Length: 318
Figure 1 (tube, rainbow, N blue to C red):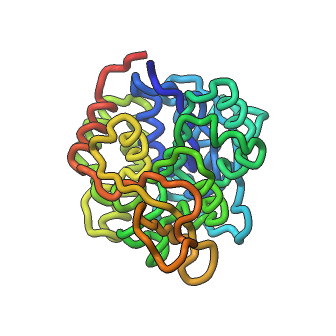
Figure 2: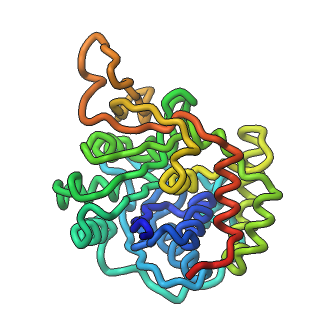
């Protein structure tokens, strides 16, 4: 049976790659896309989510969500990384479909309640929609099958501050709620995603196989690749958001440690994710609040890329 997922996303370039996987993989039942600000504004995020599903020839519900953080002022979108339109400033076709009237948080609550124990929430942007869903229905913690969050960094350092990863930094208060909510959670952060590089040759194979969607993936990748060459000195890009889906279906490609997570919500280390390893004693208990979670600390980079390519070049199964 395919795993039913809700994919919570702020569609920039790596989100688009991950959405392509969610649309293509036979072991994923994509119940819907919920959108958030982050890489782009909420309006652009929703437009891109609708566009990507249309280009894939699929009809997937899209529910619009958080337009800004819970508490802090909103950071401007990182246009130098994803482009003004989130997809590398390429020409994009018009969309003909519309988002649901329902909010993202309500969509999450309704879908999980319709199938308790079944649904996996995969969140690859700032975590406001999941925080809002918890507020609407605190019982979600016992009804979701799992929450997979692409975000955070334990030992790798940050990508928007010396210590903070972008999704957590964009809404640290929401992240603190979601990472400590007590539901079964796996964090797939920079410790794992920075081990994976989607190289130009692999991307070329994906572009060829993915038709109209492939064209957008390929052209947006070129913009993102230029950023990575300058920022990290690599030729390609880290497919951060795809890694959350790889973990879901191929956890054997990751090294996981267990511990208690907390998020620094303000000050110089705002947005930092801190993990207190399970069974380690510290001077007091403040770092060991909530439930033990799984944190990906490493990944088999070539194995992850092979899986992504295999998924996106396989003949469509549905």
